Length: 555
Image 1 (cartoon, rainbow, N blue to C red):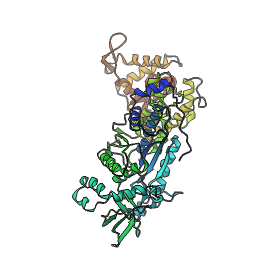
Image 2 (image 1 turned 60 degrees about the vertical axis):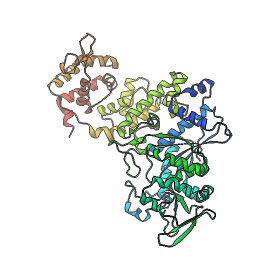
Image 3 (image 1 turned 90 degrees about the horizontal axis):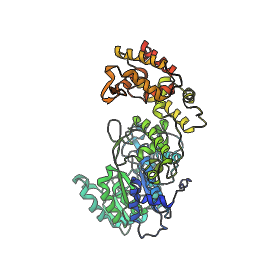
Image 4 (image 1 turned 45 degrees about the vertical axis):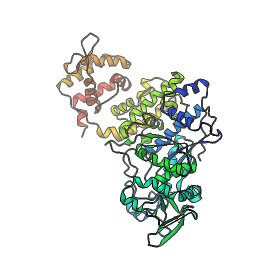
């Protein structure tokens, strides 16, 4: 168990009443859970569980289960006035056999002799202090959960099976063997039916997890008999970690053994949920409340896989953005499939700042719908970030900043009194912006050479900026930039109205400026960017675009 304590909550009557009708999805799930435990001993803890398959390196989807479950747990605590104890168990299925070697591990050939052995019996290919592949991946998950500050208990299937914590229910499974088979066999093809068993013995000769039919199941003795890999008829007790259950029966067994009250899982489990529930009931348990979320996709629209290593890892996100931005990504629309790759990071960062900044001025009802409330378990911090992440990225782009000092020189001039010491959250974003730009923006920058219309427009823009005071604010500069484009037919938009009743300015004008001056297709509000970057510096950038110096840098 981690040493982190559950954070205190605002349990004012107004907040509890608002929680009873809040439409935020964690409160909707918490109200279902509250109905589930009606009439139950209130001193009995409500158990929230998340599952982790350590067959590959942890990915963000794994973190998402813990973050989202924590959000439901916090909502439940509010609804009950925090009078009913709760637990969050993060369960690792590390006794599973390694059925294939992940693509993203070093020296894959060295792991081939360990195929089908439990993940906690496979050597650690990454080196270090962790004895096994399963131990290493478990540690990676715990490291991030600890970094984020979750309150949870970690559980290892290897430990639970071998210590005897599942023995009672495993003996029950031996007694209900045929009932479990009656649930499972109709879900399988004819070939699989012929060899299927819910019990997977671990070979005493090879140490592998065996997918073999049972010759006999002795419920009274609590044993199974099967043919080992060397052809020997072997009998093992179902207790003590000598066997484990197939993954579908294992779900239901675990729920029954631990009295799990709530577990969420991905849409890929949806068709199997009735199977898990039925096996749980056969083994004497009550199926938990479920929450089914949509899966994450990579930039090609393919499902993210731990073994493939596609999509983002936990460490990759945290290299370029804060944990809070990641938690926001998890909170938003969990039942909608979302692409999870590097391009989503800047938007998540700025959206988090927006929600956190607005939080203090909101009513109680609005606060409970604000993602910041759920991300911070009801205790959002004060956030003051006067420059957006998107703006910082473009400032890095224009200035070619390689360190924080360069960016802070611009920021301090634009926002007097703001320093790295007074605004540590902004300083954090400055570091993220430099890393993100270097790795993802800079390699894709392509400056366009201005055509005749663009060349004339740039010269007019330069002359216009020259007439403005150097301390002009973003709105003044934005108006001046719009005035440059109004008489140019290419940039007129008949659907918009200008201040004189004529055509408005098309977004194509700003797209052209981004391509010509920043080498990008998109950018921030241009007037605000110029105010932050500086009018003299922007004019110097325009001069380079006019002379062709920026284009020559493409090579």
